[in-house]
Length: 395
Image (cartoon, rainbow, N blue to C red; front, side, top):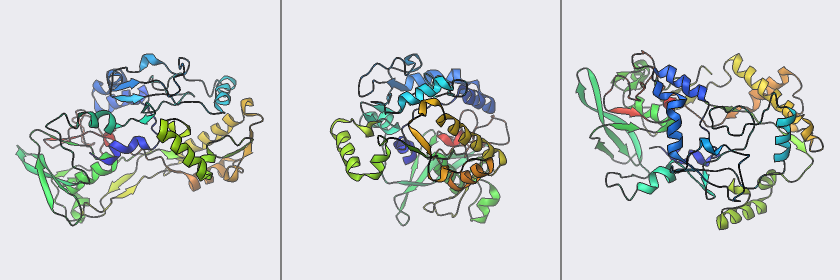
């Protein structure tokens, strides 16, 4: 279990299921209808409880409660108390409806449009994989042990099933110079080290591209060339506008006293401002498991990447020019001022684009009998026995 799995919601705590088209595409790629939206949707309901926002307001016109769960461990909610520009945003969806339609609930399978953000927050506190699924059973399950500050260093083969290598041992250590230990699974190893850690552990275990492993002196147990390939991430490009108001969240960033007050308010009552491509690749830098891998997100490598982001910037500009913003937005600010041509926008994107920390795809799923891919539709590692991957690296 990686810290990524437990801590990822710390970033923004967005609750998003994705598009029904994406899930149907997973079904096509994997050759298994079980990955389709209609088959996955019941599990979204089963895992979630939609809770009231901290201000307990009526949210009927902000969310479609019918597509949300009521008995699951993961708590979700809408934010408390809106901010001053909310009405302007909603008015923009009316004035520019054809391009920016209002979307009552972006988790109903059709995420296109503008609507209220849903978050993995319940009772004013963060709800994560750790708090929802792990902590409630930590003292109740005699077959569950969690080792803290422990680093999985590799998977150890335990034999053969015909010509298929069997993996049921995990080697781990608590420091680069400390002793190593091994535990053995009775049935299977579930690898959930995240889209960075999972391919790294596989390669350290001799599962990956044979030529690359050989260069680092690692014996190839299973030649899977797609391990670490097809890495995907979301590029992020921010824009700035000067506005005719001091009532913005920027104040929390620039005035430490305000941030301290907001933090104290949250700590006391869980209220206030704080309550609310072809792919890249990953390779080993060393056979030492404590050395970070080499990550190439390969962002903006293709012309289409730049073209899509250019149109996104122009769409944001059109959004800001709706009548709803008259008297509030003074104009573009700082580096956004000169974005008046495609060439200027493309140069801006190449200068300021960054990662949104949504890495996926580095151990991708494929049909059971396809030569490519790392796992089949059942998430078992291809060509191996006793090993499954259960994290975003398969998507």
